[in-house]
Length: 112
Length: 111
Image 1 (cartoon, rainbow over the protein chains, first blue to last red):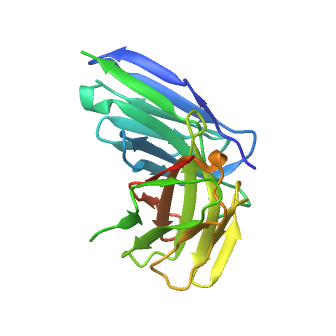
Image 2 (cartoon, rainbow over the protein chains, first blue to last red):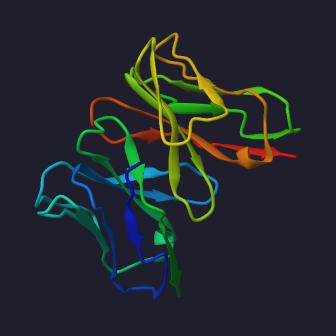
Image 3 (cartoon, one colour):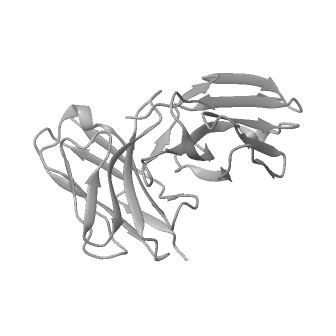
Protein backbone atom coordinates (compact mmCIF):
# COMPACT_ATOMS: atom_id res chain seq x y z
CA UNK A 1 0.00 0.00 0.00
CA UNK A 2 0.86 3.65 -0.06
CA UNK A 3 3.20 4.95 2.62
CA UNK A 4 3.53 8.37 4.16
CA UNK A 5 6.73 9.27 5.97
CA UNK A 6 5.94 11.73 8.74
CA UNK A 7 8.58 13.56 10.75
CA UNK A 8 9.54 14.21 13.38
CA UNK A 9 8.17 11.32 15.40
CA UNK A 10 8.03 13.48 18.53
CA UNK A 11 8.72 17.06 19.56
CA UNK A 12 9.22 18.80 22.88
CA UNK A 13 8.85 22.57 22.64
CA UNK A 14 8.46 25.55 24.95
CA UNK A 15 5.13 27.34 25.09
CA UNK A 16 5.17 30.20 22.60
CA UNK A 17 7.51 28.52 20.14
CA UNK A 18 6.61 27.72 16.55
CA UNK A 19 6.39 24.12 15.36
CA UNK A 20 6.84 22.53 11.98
CA UNK A 21 6.20 18.96 10.88
CA UNK A 22 6.06 17.37 7.46
CA UNK A 23 4.99 14.39 5.45
CA UNK A 24 6.51 12.93 2.31
CA UNK A 25 5.56 10.18 -0.09
CA UNK A 26 7.16 8.43 -3.03
CA UNK A 27 3.78 8.59 -4.81
CA UNK A 28 1.66 11.49 -5.99
CA UNK A 29 -1.22 12.46 -3.72
CA UNK A 30 -4.41 14.23 -4.78
CA UNK A 31 -5.38 15.51 -1.34
CA UNK A 32 -3.55 16.15 1.90
CA UNK A 33 -5.26 16.30 5.27
CA UNK A 34 -3.91 17.13 8.71
CA UNK A 35 -5.53 15.71 11.83
CA UNK A 36 -5.01 16.10 15.56
CA UNK A 37 -5.76 13.35 18.06
CA UNK A 38 -6.23 13.95 21.77
CA UNK A 39 -5.82 11.04 24.22
CA UNK A 40 -8.78 8.68 24.17
CA UNK A 41 -10.41 10.40 21.21
CA UNK A 42 -10.62 9.96 17.47
CA UNK A 43 -8.65 12.18 15.07
CA UNK A 44 -10.16 15.59 14.33
CA UNK A 45 -9.62 17.29 11.00
CA UNK A 46 -7.54 20.48 11.18
CA UNK A 47 -6.84 21.41 7.57
CA UNK A 48 -7.68 19.93 4.17
CA UNK A 49 -5.66 20.68 1.02
CA UNK A 50 -6.89 19.86 -2.48
CA UNK A 51 -4.52 21.53 -4.97
CA UNK A 52 -0.78 21.46 -5.49
CA UNK A 53 0.80 24.60 -4.09
CA UNK A 54 -2.24 25.39 -1.94
CA UNK A 55 -1.46 27.17 1.34
CA UNK A 56 -4.26 27.15 3.91
CA UNK A 57 -4.52 28.55 7.42
CA UNK A 58 -6.77 27.70 10.34
CA UNK A 59 -6.05 30.11 13.17
CA UNK A 60 -2.45 29.50 14.30
CA UNK A 61 -2.13 26.51 11.96
CA UNK A 62 -0.85 26.73 8.40
CA UNK A 63 -0.46 23.83 5.99
CA UNK A 64 0.76 23.56 2.42
CA UNK A 65 0.25 21.05 -0.38
CA UNK A 66 3.67 20.57 -1.95
CA UNK A 67 4.11 21.57 -5.57
CA UNK A 68 5.38 18.09 -6.48
CA UNK A 69 2.22 16.61 -4.88
CA UNK A 70 4.47 14.30 -2.88
CA UNK A 71 4.73 16.27 0.34
CA UNK A 72 2.95 18.55 2.78
CA UNK A 73 3.88 20.46 5.91
CA UNK A 74 2.02 21.78 8.93
CA UNK A 75 3.17 24.79 10.96
CA UNK A 76 1.81 25.78 14.35
CA UNK A 77 2.70 29.28 15.49
CA UNK A 78 2.96 30.49 19.10
CA UNK A 79 2.24 27.09 20.65
CA UNK A 80 -0.01 26.82 23.70
CA UNK A 81 -0.53 23.95 26.17
CA UNK A 82 -3.70 22.73 24.43
CA UNK A 83 -1.68 22.05 21.27
CA UNK A 84 -0.43 18.88 22.98
CA UNK A 85 -1.47 15.75 21.11
CA UNK A 86 -0.63 13.57 18.14
CA UNK A 87 -0.71 15.17 14.70
CA UNK A 88 -1.29 12.98 11.67
CA UNK A 89 -0.91 13.72 8.00
CA UNK A 90 -3.17 11.79 5.66
CA UNK A 91 -3.93 11.80 1.99
CA UNK A 92 -5.58 10.25 -1.00
CA UNK A 93 -3.00 8.79 -3.35
CA UNK A 94 -3.57 9.22 -7.07
CA UNK A 95 -5.55 6.21 -8.24
CA UNK A 96 -6.74 5.33 -4.72
CA UNK A 97 -9.63 7.75 -4.73
CA UNK A 98 -11.44 6.91 -1.54
CA UNK A 99 -8.72 5.20 0.50
CA UNK A 100 -7.17 7.55 3.01
CA UNK A 101 -3.56 6.75 3.96
CA UNK A 102 -2.14 8.00 7.27
CA UNK A 103 1.33 8.91 8.41
CA UNK A 104 2.61 7.46 11.68
CA UNK A 105 2.05 10.68 13.60
CA UNK A 106 4.01 13.38 15.42
CA UNK A 107 3.64 13.46 19.22
CA UNK A 108 3.79 17.09 20.33
CA UNK A 109 4.55 18.07 23.91
CA UNK A 110 4.39 21.73 24.93
CA UNK A 111 6.38 22.62 28.04
CA UNK A 112 5.26 25.58 30.18
CA UNK B 1 -26.23 15.78 15.42
CA UNK B 2 -24.37 12.79 16.87
CA UNK B 3 -21.79 12.47 14.05
CA UNK B 4 -20.13 9.04 14.06
CA UNK B 5 -21.12 6.78 16.96
CA UNK B 6 -19.12 3.68 17.86
CA UNK B 7 -20.10 1.00 20.33
CA UNK B 8 -18.84 -0.46 22.55
CA UNK B 9 -16.10 1.88 23.82
CA UNK B 10 -14.19 -0.96 25.49
CA UNK B 11 -14.22 -4.72 24.97
CA UNK B 12 -12.23 -7.69 26.20
CA UNK B 13 -12.46 -10.93 24.22
CA UNK B 14 -10.99 -14.34 24.62
CA UNK B 15 -9.02 -15.82 21.75
CA UNK B 16 -11.40 -17.46 19.29
CA UNK B 17 -14.46 -15.46 20.25
CA UNK B 18 -16.36 -13.46 17.67
CA UNK B 19 -17.94 -10.05 18.02
CA UNK B 20 -19.27 -7.09 16.07
CA UNK B 21 -18.12 -3.51 16.47
CA UNK B 22 -20.93 -1.13 15.67
CA UNK B 23 -20.64 2.14 13.74
CA UNK B 24 -23.44 4.52 12.85
CA UNK B 25 -23.45 7.99 11.29
CA UNK B 26 -26.31 10.45 10.94
CA UNK B 27 -24.76 12.80 8.36
CA UNK B 28 -25.92 10.93 5.24
CA UNK B 29 -22.31 10.32 4.24
CA UNK B 30 -21.89 7.80 1.45
CA UNK B 31 -18.35 6.79 2.38
CA UNK B 32 -17.53 4.86 5.55
CA UNK B 33 -14.38 3.10 6.66
CA UNK B 34 -12.78 1.19 9.51
CA UNK B 35 -9.23 1.77 10.74
CA UNK B 36 -7.13 0.19 13.43
CA UNK B 37 -4.57 2.16 15.38
CA UNK B 38 -1.51 0.53 16.89
CA UNK B 39 1.33 2.33 18.71
CA UNK B 40 3.77 3.99 16.31
CA UNK B 41 1.91 2.82 13.21
CA UNK B 42 -0.66 5.50 12.59
CA UNK B 43 -4.05 4.35 11.34
CA UNK B 44 -4.36 1.46 8.92
CA UNK B 45 -7.40 0.91 6.74
CA UNK B 46 -9.23 -2.38 7.30
CA UNK B 47 -12.33 -2.14 5.07
CA UNK B 48 -14.26 0.65 3.44
CA UNK B 49 -17.58 1.25 1.71
CA UNK B 50 -18.49 3.82 -0.94
CA UNK B 51 -22.22 3.30 -0.47
CA UNK B 52 -24.91 0.91 0.69
CA UNK B 53 -24.30 -2.58 -0.65
CA UNK B 54 -20.69 -1.84 -1.69
CA UNK B 55 -17.64 -2.79 0.38
CA UNK B 56 -13.97 -3.32 -0.36
CA UNK B 57 -10.78 -4.33 1.40
CA UNK B 58 -8.20 -1.93 2.72
CA UNK B 59 -4.63 -2.51 3.79
CA UNK B 60 -5.22 -5.02 6.62
CA UNK B 61 -8.52 -6.86 5.98
CA UNK B 62 -7.65 -10.38 7.16
CA UNK B 63 -9.74 -11.60 10.09
CA UNK B 64 -12.44 -8.97 9.61
CA UNK B 65 -15.73 -8.83 7.72
CA UNK B 66 -17.99 -5.88 6.94
CA UNK B 67 -21.38 -5.27 5.39
CA UNK B 68 -23.27 -2.09 4.44
CA UNK B 69 -26.98 -2.74 4.30
CA UNK B 70 -27.91 0.90 5.02
CA UNK B 71 -26.23 4.28 4.47
CA UNK B 72 -26.10 4.85 8.22
CA UNK B 73 -24.53 1.65 9.54
CA UNK B 74 -21.22 -0.08 8.88
CA UNK B 75 -20.52 -2.88 11.39
CA UNK B 76 -17.12 -4.59 11.64
CA UNK B 77 -17.11 -8.29 12.53
CA UNK B 78 -14.22 -10.15 14.06
CA UNK B 79 -14.68 -13.76 13.05
CA UNK B 80 -12.31 -15.47 15.50
CA UNK B 81 -10.45 -13.01 17.68
CA UNK B 82 -6.68 -13.28 17.98
CA UNK B 83 -4.27 -11.40 20.29
CA UNK B 84 -2.86 -9.64 17.19
CA UNK B 85 -6.23 -7.92 16.87
CA UNK B 86 -5.75 -6.09 20.15
CA UNK B 87 -5.96 -2.48 19.01
CA UNK B 88 -8.02 0.68 18.97
CA UNK B 89 -10.59 0.64 16.17
CA UNK B 90 -11.92 3.79 14.56
CA UNK B 91 -14.84 4.22 12.20
CA UNK B 92 -14.94 7.24 9.89
CA UNK B 93 -17.31 8.70 7.33
CA UNK B 94 -17.18 11.38 4.66
CA UNK B 95 -19.04 12.93 1.77
CA UNK B 96 -17.01 13.27 -1.40
CA UNK B 97 -13.37 14.04 -0.70
CA UNK B 98 -14.21 16.34 2.17
CA UNK B 99 -12.57 15.70 5.50
CA UNK B 100 -13.37 12.49 7.29
CA UNK B 101 -15.29 12.50 10.59
CA UNK B 102 -14.05 9.90 13.07
CA UNK B 103 -15.81 8.19 15.92
CA UNK B 104 -14.26 8.13 19.39
CA UNK B 105 -12.98 4.57 18.99
CA UNK B 106 -13.40 1.08 20.42
CA UNK B 107 -10.55 -0.23 22.56
CA UNK B 108 -10.35 -3.99 22.05
CA UNK B 109 -8.19 -6.38 24.04
CA UNK B 110 -7.94 -10.03 23.03
CA UNK B 111 -6.56 -12.32 25.73
